[in-house]
Amino acid sequence: MTRAEGAGSTGVDPRELWLAPDRPRRGRRPAFSREAITVAAVALADTEGIDAVTMRRVAADVGAGVMSLYSYAPDKETLLDLMIDHVNGELPASAPLSGDWRSDLKTIGHLQRAHMLRHPWLAAAVPVRRPLGPRTLAFLEHALAALRPSGLDGGARLEVFAQLTAFVAGHVAHEVTQAEAALSPERAAAEALYLAAVAADGHHPELADALASAGRPVTPDATFARFLNRLVDGLDAG
Image (cartoon, rainbow, N blue to C red; front, side):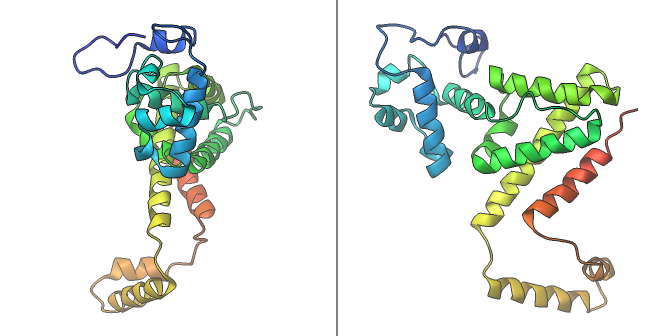
């Protein structure tokens, strides 16, 4: 593999990463593979977070020398590309489509959320990358097919899918953060009493109206479904 051309670029040329055989750039074939390296890195990220994934740690997990790992992934950016594409193989790229593009797009959104919750590091990694691996492109192909009945041209369909993915990633990142910083029942009750007092002071009529509105289910699943429905139902396919 060679580094992609261009000042400040990272990773390798995607043609060499995804189209070349799974072999090191030099030397004899070792007793491990790019797949084994990727699986070890994903397992580490799933259990300890993406910051725990270092070339040295992954090398130790697969029983390899650090320098030999660089023959497969010359930097962490490339390793992250491999990880993203590996887990994206879990997404169903050939599931039947209903022909109702809004319904199918919502299904895709729910699949993406479940996927990112299984791999919490994905929510932060996906928005800042442009994954191009075969498993990722297979799911993209599925999403574009789901959007075909909308009448949007190919470029617009790409934009809609990018918008959906960014929304899901942002929502899941918020979910993960909220779960990690969950309030104690006592603290949550205290905040509710505080907001009730503020709403009753007469200086925050909009807040008072919002708090007085009919209650909605606040489970993570129900909240995500409401937000997703608003996003998809509001898309203009004209």
